[in-house]
Amino acid sequence: MAARGRRNRRSEFTQRLDAAKREADELKGELESKRQETEEGLDSIWKNIGLTSSPGQFGFSVVRKLQGHFGKIYALHWAGDSTRLVSASQDGKLLIWNAFTETRQLAVNLKSAWVMTCAYEQDQQKFVACGGLDNVCSLFNVANPPNTTINEPTVELTGHEGYLSCCRFLSTEEILTCSGDSTCVLWDIASNTRKTQFTDHAADVMSLTLRPGDKNVFCSGSCDGSVRVWDVREGKCTHTFFGHDSDVNAVDFYPSGNIISSASDDSTCRMFDLRSRGTISVFADDMKMGSCVTSIAHSASGSLLFAGYEDNTAVAWESASQNLKWYQLGMSRDRAPRVD
Image (cartoon, rainbow, N blue to C red; front, side, top):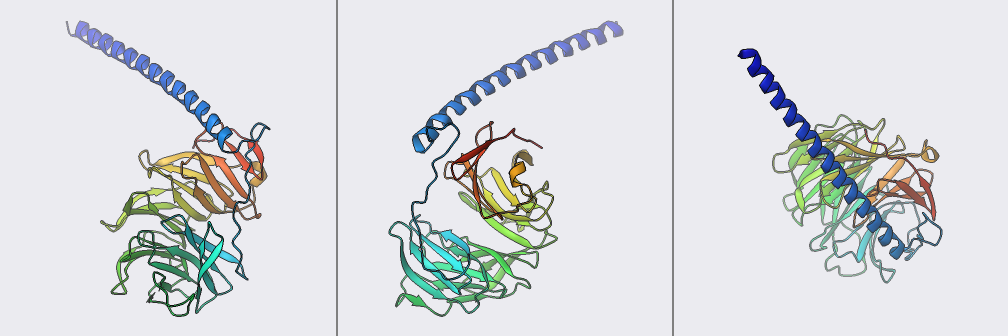
Protein backbone atom coordinates (compact mmCIF):
# COMPACT_ATOMS: atom_id res chain seq x y z
CA MET A 1 0.00 0.00 0.00
CA ALA A 2 2.81 2.41 0.88
CA ALA A 3 4.57 1.73 -2.43
CA ARG A 4 1.31 2.26 -4.35
CA GLY A 5 0.81 5.58 -2.50
CA ARG A 6 4.31 6.75 -3.42
CA ARG A 7 3.67 5.84 -7.08
CA ASN A 8 0.40 7.78 -7.05
CA ARG A 9 2.08 10.83 -5.52
CA ARG A 10 4.91 10.58 -8.05
CA SER A 11 2.40 10.32 -10.90
CA GLU A 12 0.47 13.30 -9.55
CA PHE A 13 3.69 15.32 -9.25
CA THR A 14 4.69 14.39 -12.83
CA GLN A 15 1.30 15.51 -14.13
CA ARG A 16 1.56 18.84 -12.30
CA LEU A 17 5.10 19.33 -13.62
CA ASP A 18 3.99 18.61 -17.18
CA ALA A 19 1.10 21.04 -16.80
CA ALA A 20 3.50 23.72 -15.48
CA LYS A 21 5.83 23.17 -18.45
CA ARG A 22 2.93 23.51 -20.89
CA GLU A 23 1.84 26.72 -19.18
CA ALA A 24 5.41 28.05 -19.33
CA ASP A 25 5.59 27.25 -23.06
CA GLU A 26 2.31 29.07 -23.64
CA LEU A 27 3.58 32.11 -21.73
CA LYS A 28 6.81 32.08 -23.76
CA GLY A 29 4.74 32.07 -26.93
CA GLU A 30 2.69 35.01 -25.70
CA LEU A 31 5.83 36.94 -24.74
CA GLU A 32 7.38 36.29 -28.15
CA SER A 33 4.19 37.51 -29.82
CA LYS A 34 4.20 40.66 -27.68
CA ARG A 35 7.90 41.19 -28.40
CA GLN A 36 7.33 40.96 -32.13
CA GLU A 37 4.41 43.36 -31.83
CA THR A 38 6.61 45.81 -29.90
CA GLU A 39 9.40 45.49 -32.48
CA GLU A 40 6.98 46.39 -35.26
CA GLY A 41 5.64 49.32 -33.25
CA LEU A 42 9.15 50.63 -32.57
CA ASP A 43 10.07 50.33 -36.25
CA SER A 44 7.02 52.41 -37.13
CA ILE A 45 7.88 55.06 -34.50
CA TRP A 46 11.51 55.28 -35.62
CA LYS A 47 10.47 55.76 -39.23
CA ASN A 48 8.26 58.64 -38.18
CA ILE A 49 10.89 60.40 -36.04
CA GLY A 50 13.92 60.28 -38.28
CA LEU A 51 14.80 56.91 -39.81
CA THR A 52 16.31 57.67 -43.22
CA SER A 53 15.55 55.83 -46.45
CA SER A 54 18.63 53.69 -45.84
CA PRO A 55 17.59 50.88 -43.44
CA GLY A 56 19.04 51.04 -39.93
CA GLN A 57 20.08 54.69 -39.94
CA PHE A 58 18.84 57.57 -37.81
CA GLY A 59 18.98 61.11 -39.12
CA PHE A 60 20.50 62.74 -36.02
CA SER A 61 21.33 66.40 -36.53
CA VAL A 62 22.24 69.48 -34.48
CA VAL A 63 19.12 71.50 -33.65
CA ARG A 64 20.57 74.07 -31.21
CA LYS A 65 24.06 75.42 -30.58
CA LEU A 66 24.86 77.34 -27.39
CA GLN A 67 28.04 79.39 -27.68
CA GLY A 68 29.65 81.48 -24.96
CA HIS A 69 32.15 79.42 -22.96
CA PHE A 70 35.91 79.81 -23.52
CA GLY A 71 37.07 76.62 -21.85
CA LYS A 72 36.27 72.93 -21.61
CA ILE A 73 32.59 72.34 -20.76
CA TYR A 74 32.69 69.68 -18.07
CA ALA A 75 28.99 69.30 -17.17
CA LEU A 76 25.46 70.51 -17.89
CA HIS A 77 22.03 69.90 -16.38
CA TRP A 78 18.50 70.71 -17.54
CA ALA A 79 16.07 72.67 -15.39
CA GLY A 80 12.72 71.12 -14.52
CA ASP A 81 10.94 73.23 -17.16
CA SER A 82 13.01 71.55 -19.95
CA THR A 83 13.66 74.99 -21.39
CA ARG A 84 16.61 76.27 -19.40
CA LEU A 85 19.86 74.54 -18.57
CA VAL A 86 23.07 75.28 -16.70
CA SER A 87 26.53 74.52 -18.07
CA ALA A 88 29.80 74.39 -16.14
CA SER A 89 33.09 75.20 -17.81
CA GLN A 90 36.72 75.34 -16.78
CA ASP A 91 36.75 78.96 -17.94
CA GLY A 92 35.52 79.54 -14.37
CA LYS A 93 31.88 80.20 -15.17
CA LEU A 94 28.42 78.70 -14.93
CA LEU A 95 26.09 79.89 -17.68
CA ILE A 96 22.28 79.72 -17.58
CA TRP A 97 20.76 79.27 -21.03
CA ASN A 98 17.38 79.34 -22.72
CA ALA A 99 17.94 76.37 -25.00
CA PHE A 100 15.09 77.18 -27.37
CA THR A 101 16.11 80.78 -28.08
CA GLU A 102 19.84 79.92 -27.84
CA THR A 103 20.37 82.89 -25.52
CA ARG A 104 22.51 83.24 -22.40
CA GLN A 105 20.40 84.51 -19.50
CA LEU A 106 22.83 84.58 -16.59
CA ALA A 107 26.53 84.14 -15.85
CA VAL A 108 27.98 82.93 -12.54
CA ASN A 109 31.64 83.65 -11.77
CA LEU A 110 33.22 80.85 -9.74
CA LYS A 111 35.94 81.08 -7.11
CA SER A 112 37.54 77.92 -8.53
CA ALA A 113 37.77 77.23 -12.27
CA TRP A 114 38.28 73.50 -11.64
CA VAL A 115 34.57 72.69 -11.75
CA MET A 116 33.46 69.09 -12.40
CA THR A 117 29.68 69.09 -11.92
CA CYS A 118 26.61 71.31 -11.91
CA ALA A 119 22.93 70.89 -11.07
CA TYR A 120 19.68 72.82 -11.57
CA GLU A 121 17.01 72.66 -8.87
CA GLN A 122 14.02 71.03 -10.58
CA ASP A 123 10.83 72.16 -8.84
CA GLN A 124 11.13 75.94 -8.61
CA GLN A 125 14.34 76.49 -10.62
CA LYS A 126 15.50 78.61 -7.68
CA PHE A 127 19.08 77.34 -7.28
CA VAL A 128 21.97 76.06 -9.33
CA ALA A 129 24.88 74.25 -7.72
CA CYS A 130 28.39 73.25 -8.70
CA GLY A 131 31.60 71.77 -7.31
CA GLY A 132 34.91 70.28 -8.27
CA LEU A 133 38.50 70.15 -7.10
CA ASP A 134 37.79 72.72 -4.38
CA ASN A 135 35.86 69.97 -2.45
CA VAL A 136 32.99 72.46 -1.94
CA CYS A 137 29.38 72.43 -3.17
CA SER A 138 28.50 76.06 -4.02
CA LEU A 139 24.85 77.08 -4.40
CA PHE A 140 23.64 80.20 -6.21
CA ASN A 141 20.14 81.71 -6.07
CA VAL A 142 19.17 82.38 -9.69
CA ALA A 143 15.45 83.04 -9.18
CA ASN A 144 15.59 86.86 -9.13
CA PRO A 145 19.15 88.03 -9.77
CA PRO A 146 19.80 91.79 -9.52
CA ASN A 147 21.72 91.71 -12.80
CA THR A 148 23.00 89.27 -15.40
CA THR A 149 26.10 88.28 -13.41
CA ILE A 150 26.44 86.58 -10.02
CA ASN A 151 29.78 86.72 -8.21
CA GLU A 152 29.13 85.22 -4.77
CA PRO A 153 27.49 81.93 -3.75
CA THR A 154 24.38 81.94 -1.60
CA VAL A 155 25.52 78.83 0.32
CA GLU A 156 28.77 76.86 0.48
CA LEU A 157 28.58 73.28 1.73
CA THR A 158 31.95 72.10 3.07
CA GLY A 159 32.88 68.76 4.57
CA HIS A 160 33.96 66.44 1.75
CA GLU A 161 37.61 65.38 1.92
CA GLY A 162 37.89 64.85 -1.84
CA TYR A 163 36.80 66.48 -5.08
CA LEU A 164 33.07 66.93 -5.71
CA SER A 165 32.14 64.75 -8.69
CA CYS A 166 28.35 65.13 -8.86
CA CYS A 167 25.44 66.88 -7.14
CA ARG A 168 21.64 66.74 -7.48
CA PHE A 169 18.84 68.66 -5.75
CA LEU A 170 16.09 66.78 -3.94
CA SER A 171 14.25 70.06 -3.31
CA THR A 172 14.95 73.68 -2.47
CA GLU A 173 15.84 72.44 1.04
CA GLU A 174 18.04 69.40 0.31
CA ILE A 175 20.84 68.41 -2.05
CA LEU A 176 22.87 65.23 -2.58
CA THR A 177 26.57 65.23 -3.37
CA CYS A 178 29.15 62.54 -4.11
CA SER A 179 32.89 62.80 -3.89
CA GLY A 180 36.35 61.42 -4.43
CA ASP A 181 36.39 60.68 -0.69
CA SER A 182 34.18 57.62 -1.54
CA THR A 183 31.05 59.03 0.15
CA CYS A 184 27.69 60.48 -0.77
CA VAL A 185 26.17 63.13 1.50
CA LEU A 186 22.64 64.49 1.96
CA TRP A 187 22.75 68.16 3.00
CA ASP A 188 20.27 70.51 4.62
CA ILE A 189 20.69 73.73 2.65
CA ALA A 190 19.15 76.16 5.13
CA SER A 191 21.29 75.03 8.09
CA ASN A 192 24.37 74.27 5.95
CA THR A 193 24.76 70.87 7.65
CA ARG A 194 25.07 67.19 6.75
CA LYS A 195 21.93 65.17 7.36
CA THR A 196 23.12 61.72 6.22
CA GLN A 197 26.40 60.26 5.01
CA PHE A 198 26.45 57.17 2.76
CA THR A 199 29.74 55.30 3.09
CA ASP A 200 29.51 51.82 1.52
CA HIS A 201 31.62 52.57 -1.57
CA ALA A 202 35.30 51.61 -1.40
CA ALA A 203 36.64 54.18 -3.89
CA ASP A 204 35.83 57.52 -5.56
CA VAL A 205 32.10 58.01 -6.24
CA MET A 206 31.82 59.47 -9.74
CA SER A 207 28.10 59.93 -10.35
CA LEU A 208 24.66 59.86 -8.76
CA THR A 209 21.11 60.10 -10.09
CA LEU A 210 17.65 60.30 -8.52
CA ARG A 211 14.92 57.74 -9.17
CA PRO A 212 12.15 59.21 -11.38
CA GLY A 213 9.09 60.01 -9.30
CA ASP A 214 10.74 59.01 -6.02
CA LYS A 215 13.38 61.34 -4.60
CA ASN A 216 13.82 59.08 -1.58
CA VAL A 217 15.85 56.69 -3.75
CA PHE A 218 19.07 57.40 -5.63
CA CYS A 219 21.88 55.37 -7.14
CA SER A 220 25.60 55.99 -7.45
CA GLY A 221 28.49 54.68 -9.51
CA SER A 222 32.04 54.34 -8.21
CA CYS A 223 35.63 53.59 -9.15
CA ASP A 224 35.25 50.41 -7.07
CA GLY A 225 33.31 49.06 -10.07
CA SER A 226 29.96 48.91 -8.31
CA VAL A 227 26.58 50.57 -8.75
CA ARG A 228 24.69 51.06 -5.50
CA VAL A 229 21.09 52.04 -4.75
CA TRP A 230 20.32 53.99 -1.58
CA ASP A 231 17.21 54.84 0.42
CA VAL A 232 17.41 58.35 1.86
CA ARG A 233 14.82 57.57 4.55
CA GLU A 234 16.74 54.59 5.91
CA GLY A 235 20.16 56.07 5.20
CA LYS A 236 21.54 52.82 3.83
CA CYS A 237 22.29 50.84 0.66
CA THR A 238 19.45 48.63 -0.58
CA HIS A 239 20.97 47.15 -3.77
CA THR A 240 24.53 46.55 -4.98
CA PHE A 241 25.35 45.65 -8.59
CA PHE A 242 28.67 44.38 -9.93
CA GLY A 243 29.70 43.45 -13.45
CA HIS A 244 31.94 46.21 -14.75
CA ASP A 245 35.66 45.50 -14.99
CA SER A 246 36.70 49.08 -14.28
CA ASP A 247 35.54 52.46 -12.94
CA VAL A 248 31.84 53.33 -13.25
CA ASN A 249 31.77 56.90 -14.55
CA ALA A 250 28.05 57.60 -14.89
CA VAL A 251 24.65 56.20 -13.91
CA ASP A 252 21.11 56.99 -15.00
CA PHE A 253 17.68 55.58 -14.13
CA TYR A 254 15.47 54.24 -16.90
CA PRO A 255 12.27 56.38 -17.11
CA SER A 256 10.22 53.66 -15.36
CA GLY A 257 12.55 53.82 -12.34
CA ASN A 258 13.03 50.03 -12.18
CA ILE A 259 16.23 49.83 -14.24
CA ILE A 260 19.61 51.53 -13.85
CA SER A 261 22.05 52.05 -16.70
CA SER A 262 25.76 52.57 -16.09
CA ALA A 263 28.79 53.65 -18.12
CA SER A 264 32.32 52.44 -17.44
CA ASP A 265 35.99 52.71 -18.33
CA ASP A 266 35.71 49.09 -19.54
CA SER A 267 34.07 50.45 -22.76
CA THR A 268 30.64 49.03 -21.90
CA CYS A 269 27.26 50.20 -20.70
CA ARG A 270 25.12 47.92 -18.56
CA MET A 271 21.50 47.73 -17.47
CA PHE A 272 20.65 46.46 -13.99
CA ASP A 273 17.11 45.53 -12.91
CA LEU A 274 16.14 46.44 -9.35
CA ARG A 275 13.49 43.71 -9.19
CA SER A 276 15.66 40.80 -10.30
CA ARG A 277 18.79 42.35 -8.73
CA GLY A 278 20.93 41.47 -11.73
CA THR A 279 22.31 42.51 -15.12
CA ILE A 280 19.79 42.36 -17.95
CA SER A 281 21.81 43.88 -20.83
CA VAL A 282 25.37 44.75 -21.77
CA PHE A 283 26.04 47.26 -24.54
CA ALA A 284 29.43 46.75 -26.16
CA ASP A 285 30.96 46.62 -29.62
CA ASP A 286 34.41 45.74 -30.91
CA MET A 287 34.66 49.14 -32.62
CA LYS A 288 34.31 50.84 -29.23
CA MET A 289 36.66 48.64 -27.21
CA GLY A 290 39.45 50.67 -25.63
CA SER A 291 37.35 53.84 -25.45
CA CYS A 292 35.99 54.68 -21.98
CA VAL A 293 32.30 55.54 -21.67
CA THR A 294 32.21 58.84 -19.80
CA SER A 295 28.51 59.79 -19.77
CA ILE A 296 25.09 58.25 -20.22
CA ALA A 297 21.43 59.30 -20.56
CA HIS A 298 18.11 57.77 -21.58
CA SER A 299 15.68 59.26 -24.05
CA ALA A 300 12.31 60.30 -22.59
CA SER A 301 10.69 57.06 -23.77
CA GLY A 302 13.65 54.88 -22.77
CA SER A 303 13.90 53.38 -26.26
CA LEU A 304 17.33 54.94 -26.81
CA LEU A 305 20.33 54.91 -24.49
CA PHE A 306 22.78 57.71 -25.28
CA ALA A 307 26.43 57.25 -24.35
CA GLY A 308 29.42 59.56 -24.68
CA TYR A 309 32.82 57.99 -25.35
CA GLU A 310 36.37 59.11 -24.72
CA ASP A 311 37.08 59.03 -28.46
CA ASN A 312 34.92 62.18 -28.81
CA THR A 313 31.88 60.36 -30.17
CA ALA A 314 28.30 59.99 -28.99
CA VAL A 315 26.32 56.80 -29.58
CA ALA A 316 22.62 55.95 -29.33
CA TRP A 317 21.87 52.32 -28.42
CA GLU A 318 18.47 50.77 -29.11
CA SER A 319 17.77 49.74 -25.54
CA ALA A 320 14.18 48.58 -26.05
CA SER A 321 14.87 46.30 -29.02
CA GLN A 322 16.05 42.72 -28.84
CA ASN A 323 18.01 43.28 -32.06
CA LEU A 324 20.27 45.86 -30.43
CA LYS A 325 21.98 48.39 -32.67
CA TRP A 326 23.97 51.55 -32.12
CA TYR A 327 23.93 54.73 -34.13
CA GLN A 328 26.68 57.26 -34.62
CA LEU A 329 26.37 60.16 -37.03
CA GLY A 330 23.78 58.26 -39.06
CA MET A 331 25.75 55.00 -39.17
CA SER A 332 24.56 51.79 -37.50
CA ARG A 333 26.05 48.53 -36.32
CA ASP A 334 24.01 45.41 -35.63
CA ARG A 335 25.02 43.30 -32.68
CA ALA A 336 23.75 40.29 -30.82
CA PRO A 337 22.37 41.12 -27.37
CA ARG A 338 24.43 39.93 -24.43
CA VAL A 339 22.75 39.07 -21.16
CA ASP A 340 24.85 38.20 -18.14
